[in-house]
Length: 171
Image (tube, rainbow, N blue to C red; front, side):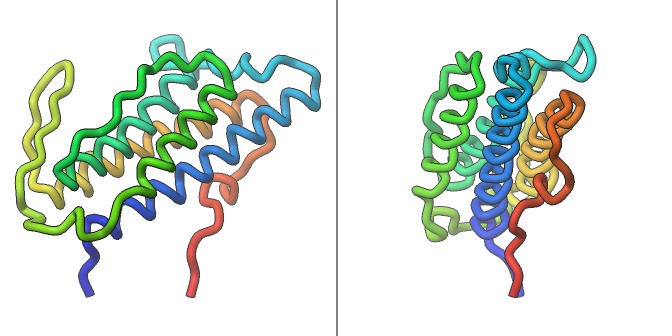
């Protein structure tokens, strides 16, 4: 059995974004229970030269919506990257979820070896669509979701592997 690019990406992004939303909500609850401003988390970094939590969430969002758009031959919505509070980050995750839910499997049809082009600040990269998913889209997305998890865990939020994985579909 082969999996379509839709099946490999959209359900995976949606599951992880819902889990990301849940851990952000746990962070807010954690801060409120300990009587500190939950927005303290927004600017946290693991190391001075790493991006803060708000950028990790923004990039995870961009990675998911950008992959879906590229694979479906559509233009992704532009989110302005202005989130500076936990409620704004949660709203961004919700907008990303809503956007991804709008896709249908048939939008991802076609040749899995078609070219997908990514322009980064340093280079223009050309991938076969299947390689883009395996070696760029999913790893990039998970890097930023995992970094967000690590920042919140480092910040004392009581989350664990089951929060990261969430409700994994089973038979």
